[in-house]
Length: 439
Ligand code: HSE
Image 1 (cartoon, protein in one colour):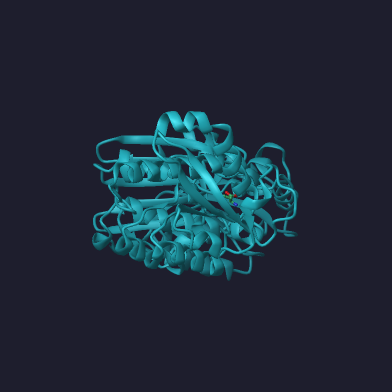
Image 2 (cartoon, protein in one colour):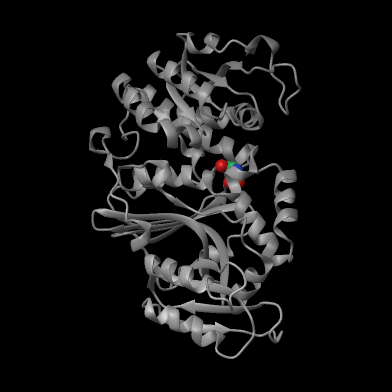
């Protein structure tokens, strides 16, 4: 057996404790698979006094991160601090000191990835970030290695467990949005700031990382179309069911020649599509490669041990390279760094899909023809109509219309016109439907 590989851990929160636990409990197994041991030499955190779910010898704990960053014996630094500022400094310092890095920090990589990967490439060190997208799911490895021979035609991903949990609770238990969110927070998988989850910022981070691996593209986060789930009501969930759909927050990427269509929004999908069966806080990815066809990946997107599993997988991967005396056998982001280009993103106006509209209209003769007339003039063809309640000339009733494929720009212009009608009493709800592409 060779000399153990020393690891420094920065950030001793839930995931950090999971990593310590897993390395300890599966030490023998890891030695058999790796041919040496992976040993945590030092753990840095601003709080080293609060008891953790694992016991650690006091001398391994420090509040001084430099004890890790400047220790020549430490080969790999695991960054589990989260956030941007300190994490960025620690990661860059570790790389500059010739250390490999493993991180679960999607916000950091989505925002500063280009700088971080470029410095890592120069310094010939590896960055493992499997845990940053899809938690325990081997999604990054699938893109970087297993599907490396494919053009990735499309990815439909449920990348945020909190949103999926909330939508599942609303759909299965009839819960309202706020109670379902509170539940998710109590269970501990929501981000510290829940707006990151529910307004799809977290999913945007994950989609940005995905696009660099699936298409070798650099993305400016603000250019990704992003819509969260906070506007979804119980009424929409019920109408979706009636129409044969389930509502999911999807991250979507579709290859259109050299242009990429990428967007994140609540989406109605056929209830019998495999993604519709992904419930609770699970994550899943439906990918299509030009050679592979459909590939489906499913698992826990967060949590102490599932995330630790991805981190330890990266540690083993990097250690295997260290032991073989090689580095970056697999390029950091699947493409050679000098081949990664700025993305040519299809503008949202030009996206074409099916739509669900819920109008709040007065119940009076001619309402439907006024609405459908405007849709028609904007080249939007109706596929189905539902109107059930009757409240003659008083309050608004919901009128639901679904469409065949229409262009987003036409849809936005039509809704602007419809919402100005005096028979329409509130802002129209729009939910995009992915039907044809998922059949
Ligand atoms: N808040 C994230 C989620 C955690 O709910 O999926 C994992 O990134």
